[in-house]
Length: 338
Image (cartoon, rainbow, N blue to C red; front, side, top):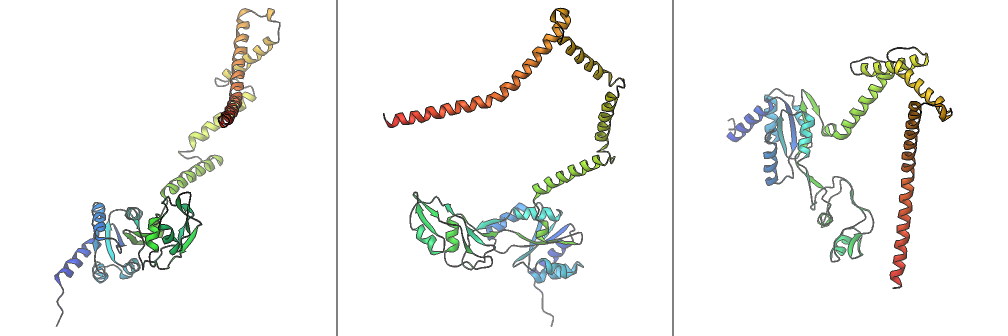
């Protein structure tokens, strides 16, 4: 006799098959440890971008194979999942990871939880007032005492190693000082996109650093292309400008008169004429030349004054600060002696 399959199982497999055949990116997530209320909120937030289906692994396998996929891929995806769910989305794998990362939040560790990493309590002032908390912290291996009217952790201490189990009140006491090491959320186990499987560690990118690196690499490539005179749409304007500047310098050095060099030669001759005129007896100069020399001298004096003021300003500011400090010090002594 063939056992009858429950209708809900048929419906679940059918729904999973539609999900798998939906195209785009497929992912497996682990929802273990996520409270039911929080799960509802997360699904609502992600509904516009992701289709999420929670199901047993066996039903996922049936739907996966019905869609013609290799079950080995699915097995590798949910190997680390305690309570898996299947996701279909049009986002790429990196976007999926980024969106799911936003659902993560820390909670206090409970007895039986496993430390996801070394639990380190830093030396600090907890800001908590004196009370029984001092003895409670010490009882779980966190060295604390009262200093300056508040409870302070005396030294940096590793209270639990990665993989060790939380016991007794350790998790609760850590939470009281702001350490909630157990991360809950929709944890990504892996994705399959265009036939390629991605692990979470591959998708964990620092986008700001990535952008900074791209800009840096682009600037380096541009400089290299300019230095080796590699002509592209981007480098041609810079290379032409550089060539024009170098050609102008050669023409000026060789005293070649062109429409571009002529203004430079005239300016150079003008400065030379003023220099010669400045060495002559003022009575030998006409009014126009004397006026030009006076204007040039005034401009030079103004420039020199500006530079001198800029250099002296910090020194004056320091002197004023020292005077204020000395005055403040004497005021303090005066108040001591009435």
